[in-house]
Length: 366
Length: 128
Image (cartoon, rainbow over all chains, first blue to last red; front, side, top):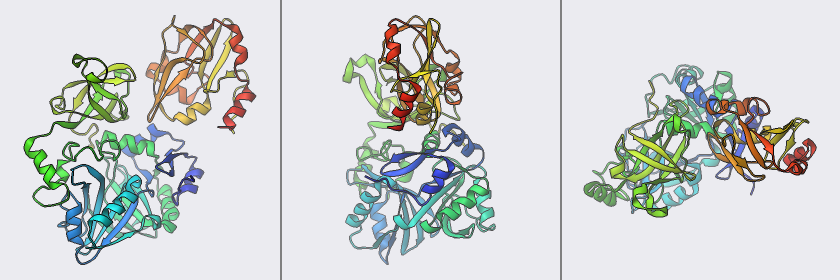
């Protein structure tokens, strides 16, 4: 099947990007600078990400708040207009349909950005569970999304917006004109750095991207997007989040407001009351071990026996800690093994590698 | 299209081999490097280990993936590039020079003739 292209595909080719299949999209995994340089540039200066493959949806109508209240684990419906809210969409089982950001425009209009690989599933989920309480408009094909991230990102975007975005605080958004392009500018991101995510019409995307490059932004591929989000301990749907684990197990309790009713609330309340049995733990592998634990590798306790009997958990994300050294990752493990300082053993392709559980972000912005 | 050094022999798995006297130096090609992206970890055998043509002799990990390295010929490992332990990025910057991986003393000389020529390898890559 022909891979889908974002409106910036031609520019990525011109930049010399290496393109890979990412959920049916032909996306840049790295530019000639390479993932490590790209990663460090976002930590030290400013990087640009084409994330136009992500899905964008409007939910509108006089009763849209009732619909949103049911769909979201976080307090989205009651948020103030102009707020961007990270939330999970849960199944009745407590498993996760997707994680996404709801942008509350008004009491009758919400803008939602969802994971690319989940766009079709989420739209179906919205249709099934909003019970005609609101209109659903999929604007994914007409919308481009560019993330501008790094310590110099806010100043760069604000300059291109003529100083109109100075007052925008973290997790708020506004309609803006950036480099002459009308867009929704949100002070959000997926790198652990400050910055903006700019949603604009696909027809304007190349103009906006080019202006951002000329202003000093370095194009960053999906490789660094993944290593950056992992260092900042931001979960990735399909790796760390899925139908089989709840937000509480994933350590996202802060985005679950249980004093309200929503799909999955009962199961999550029970889970909270009775305690978790397993938990997503962050781990670090020392540099000297010279090993990287990756998605799908088993966490083992050899005292329990051989083969499958020794498996106590699974690595969901892992990679080199580009700014923190060694290798880092996330794994679902029994709660007794999830406390900071606990020693884990990870089967890295047949070799037992020691890892230490760490709490919080691997990389903290200073 | 990239061109590949004419003094080397190649495998379809993207290793290169340079014959020098009684030993052969082995690394991975620019094509392999381009596919892998930034290399963060290289795992190699020890001097004195024996490797067998077509079988795994090590691994190379980039930010995103792990790939096995396959021996282009059989023989004894006579040298290992220890600098890759702390500077795996040499494989990215100079895959045919500072980024070499191991040296092998061939046990079956005839295997050398089975390797791809620069032309043959160029065609193999073009067909990928």
